[in-house]
Image (cartoon, rainbow, N blue to C red; front, side, top):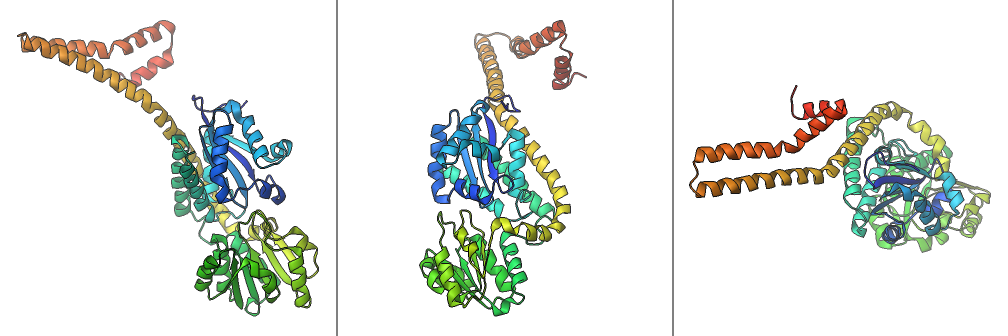
Length: 426
């Protein structure tokens, strides 16, 4: 059993899978859409014993649960996720990882800073982490433990991005997809591209394609208004996803990231498009999880289909310049994780501090009331004040005096040294 590194019954757990531990076929089965997260969060809170707080980060590269619970109930997290996402528990256990408390903070800060991303230093993940915590807050599953973790995480991740060169040269999955397109089509000015989706990733794809002089651009989305809004920024043609099958033959490059839970382009539609193109090749990059393009499309001749996992090699080439920056970034991450633990301990110590101050205030008030009564009865002010000071001092130092005597009698030299430091008795 893994124990918390803090002396509290509740601990922080980071549990999940990512692109290193699970293939895309598994990640897309476990992934959560933004719309499904509120229900999942409340279901987890209500069905995992001792769980008091929960947040879920789900992107194309990872699905991670951040939970506050008793470490003894970690196996229930695996059981819940395997049942909720309909994946064999043994399969999930072979791919999932767990991090507790300071290690959990260290992991999440690395994630938010882009140090654990497939594209080292990619900037989108910080916003995705913030969104995950905002959704948990809206769902009522974010409490003081995870709220503190989110604050320290985001502030440290921002520091990593501002104080190091980790994000100096823009590199992202979108950038990698366009770079791969440039390798296949030497001159993008003679090609037309169709983008499926209208989110941040597709926006960045459009920016990179436009910067590389793409000959024509269209943006398709389930909601036409969103497609029109994004298309207007890039002088692109907007359309609905339902129009894609009929228009597919007009495009040499297709890059998809819709966030749909089911494929939006099937093998039949691509096969028909290839025939209309008289077997002129189509380059397709599916950077969505779950996938937007049916995997069977890869079987078709004259179609070059790549998924997000296929971008690894090109990504590695583009991030070499960031690896030196990552070393200094890791130092900041470690500092942030330690800062989180210190802040967490300080937060948990506030109740004890309040009790300590309340006890001292009660003693002070009792002695003050007694002194005022003595003055009201005509006692000499000097005698009353002297007695007040002496009695108050004796009562305030009573407990520490007993602690010092007991520590001396029992040979607790470490406690004696601490008390000397605490009361500045050197």
